Amino acid sequence: MRQWREAHGGLLVTSVKATAWMFFGLLASYAAEFLLLFLRRGAASGRAWLPLFTHSPLVLAWGWRRIHR
Image 1 (spheres, helix red, strand yellow):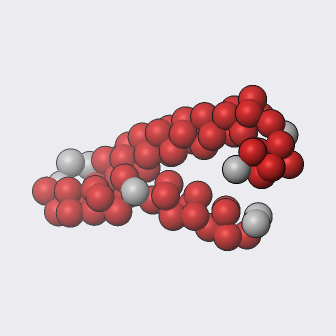
Image 2 (spheres, rainbow, N blue to C red):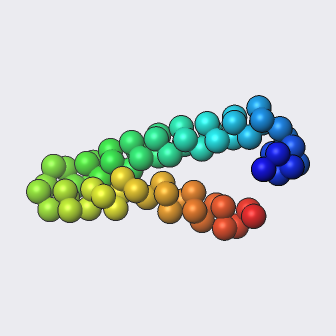
């Protein structure tokens, strides 16, 4: 683990990257939920889509990692 961390910039750089990914996930989740509320305008059927919209940042992060390995 130490070798990997040193090869990727050290403890500070990897911690900053991890924190940036965490905040991206939080903000993207909020944006997706507000988008859902805006598109569905409070319709009861829109609630069924909430888990998909809420977890969509995970799919984006997974895709990013698959491309940039």
